[in-house]
Length: 527
Ligand code: B12
Image 1 (cartoon, protein in one colour):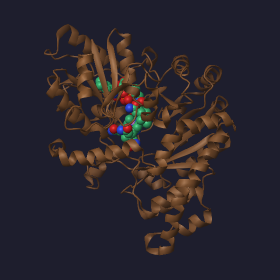
Image 2 (image 1 turned 90 degrees about the vertical axis):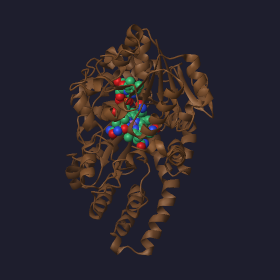
Image 3 (image 1 turned 30 degrees about the vertical axis):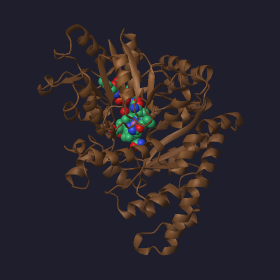
Image 4 (image 1 turned 60 degrees about the horizontal axis):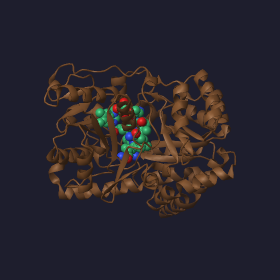
């Protein structure tokens, strides 16, 4: 049986779909992945129609995060008009909002999809599509009303799942009205992949030990439990040795919510094997209170080049009371010190545009951030009220959030307020200047606004890229060849980010498509 897995994301990092397709192949089925970046057209393009007619899938799967809801709804309607093929939705949004998704799809996957999709294809083969399946994690119109829809326990043995490839030969992309095989057109793949395709995105754990109020994990942990499940070092190495064969892979980007949930024993075994077999620079994410100096040193020796750490706010009130994230700024400062001392490039993430934050909180955040050891890079994300997050429920109750806003706005699109701009430039300007500019609106003059705008312009275009290059060069132990390869591999995405003020090109294009779809297809946006 054949399954076509479609992603509507603007980029080609489709970890979930790669896992599902690998498992389908291992179980005797066939799979293709098709990237339709932000597809929101009134009609199915002839190339897509031909592709489906040629491949003749028995099942079409659409993977979606919440922001891809409208493209998924539209595409499903177009597919149903042309073909008699059942459509299943899966991914984070399907898990969080299964009832809403069930209005449009024939099946909804309410958890991990690897085994569920294999069972569904087996069912379609044996019993056909007119008999409703009874499969754990698969919601149908029939069993939707059941009190206890069948749930599969979270996958306990992650090593038993075939892992994802960097670029499978059955991965296709829709570009300028044609469909291309990415493996045969690697240049095109790299255009759609983040960071020019220089990173392999890898996940060694599933789950997060925290339950922050703004994060989908707070909901996902009710489905998967609080326990963080991990892969063995051997299993991770097998995936990486395969990935390393591709000369374009320069970095491994570990997307685990917190790489430091692994214990020291796992870490040292990993570091040893990684250095021996892989030896590529790599990136990890960490939650400040989980950072372990010893483990960090061990990873650093194995090639760790960048540590991404969520700080979110510099105000303890906001972190504790609003975000339900019990991490004080003193812990953040300590963790930042350890990262700097290790020589890895520090990359800190903040959440802004928070309606529960006062001007005093924002001023406190800027002051706090300025106390972190330089040099470092910060990235600001717009607080998006995604469905399923406890803070979203609170904000809707408090009438403070538009419950549909997440459908139209990317995290990277932040408000261009005075204090957001000042926060963004704080790591790069003299502290005395920061103190002079860090004022409440009531005491600001034209000169403050002028200076913030001026430094924002200069910093974003010239200073920040130079600091970024410097911390990466240092993290790569001043290896010039690696630096040149990084710059060459990333120049296109870096350039496009600079021009479009840090909003990815794909996201900008999606914004435009969404705006014109609202005009041309108002019925799509009706509830
Ligand atoms: C890696 C990652 C990315 C990567 C790759 C995403 C990907 N599709 O693989 C990148 C960097 C591209 C990314 C981008 C964004 N991300 Co992200 N990302 C993650 C992260 C950290 C891990 C995802 C992952 O690989 N999980 C491991 C795989 C195995 O699990 P999975 O993807 O859930 O897939 C399983 C099931 O969901 C299901 N499944 C998935 N797809 C399908 C399809 C079918 C047909 C079926 C049947 C089943 C099925 O089966 C899979 C295997 O078991 C998660 C956090 C998390 N813990 O989930 C956030 C997360 C998914 N991202 C999130 C967000 C918000 C974004 C952005 C929108 C942020 C932004 N820039 O504004 C962008 C999307 C931009 C775009 N449209 O292109 C949110 C989503 C919230 C929501 N309600 O939608 C999450 C949950 C983070 C969070 N904590 O809130 N992200």
